[in-house]
Image 1 (cartoon, helix red, strand yellow):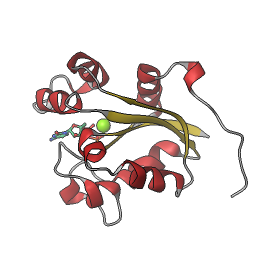
Image 2 (cartoon, helix red, strand yellow; image 1 turned 180 degrees about the horizontal axis):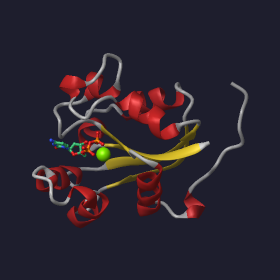
Image 3 (cartoon, rainbow, N blue to C red; image 1 turned 45 degrees about the vertical axis):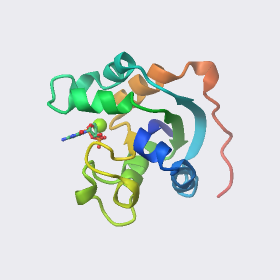
Length: 144
Ligand code: CDP
Ligand code: MG
């Protein structure tokens, strides 16, 4: 069992795709074990994306991520990090495979609907950035 952090970004929340994205998560063997809706400040968005601080897209990305509410979840499952990234699709929706969330919902490379941790180390940092241990509800494993 592995955990990863998922964010439904402002473009997807605004356009009403939260439920459809939850469907893909829960329909593909991932469990939502923590959940919140928040409106990030610019500083909170900058802290979350600090690994990208030197990248040219950082100012635009952090302004966008603090422009509206986001939905943040911890997902749990076998190979959850890779499974969630596979469901998301490539960063640029133009390159995303058919059937992925970004292919189906993203607006452009910035407003690409979802975030997912890219390694166990980033998952650990990102989960603890938003959730304390008492806000995470690990489920018993169920039959599939
Ligand atoms: O989200 P992902 O891990 O696929 O991509 P990233 O390289 O970690 O970049 C983080 C986020 O920055 C992306 O999801 C986009 O929202 C944004 N980005 C951008 O606006 N322009 C780029 N050229 C690359 C990323
Ligand atoms: Mg990334």
